[in-house]
Length: 72
Image 1 (cartoon, rainbow, N blue to C red):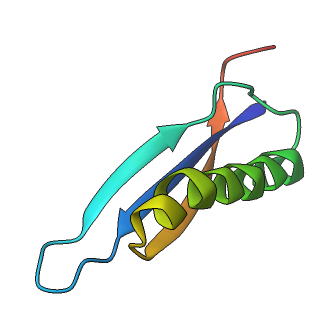
Image 2 (cartoon, rainbow, N blue to C red):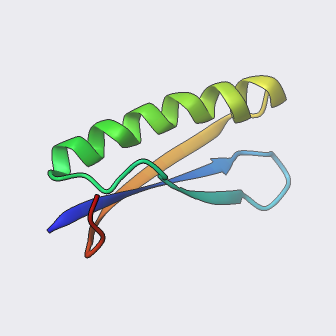
């Protein structure tokens, strides 16, 4: 079994509904859950650079590693 990585980024805007977007990793799947988690951390760092910092809007991030039937 392999693992696919997903990261959800939610913008925290006061007075508005929370807006979330889910991102699916295009590099995986990964052999171990640990590799999947490591990729989620990398994706979070990239999303901070590309979403949160330019907009100045704070974001929260969550990830999930899902067992996948895909293979490399």
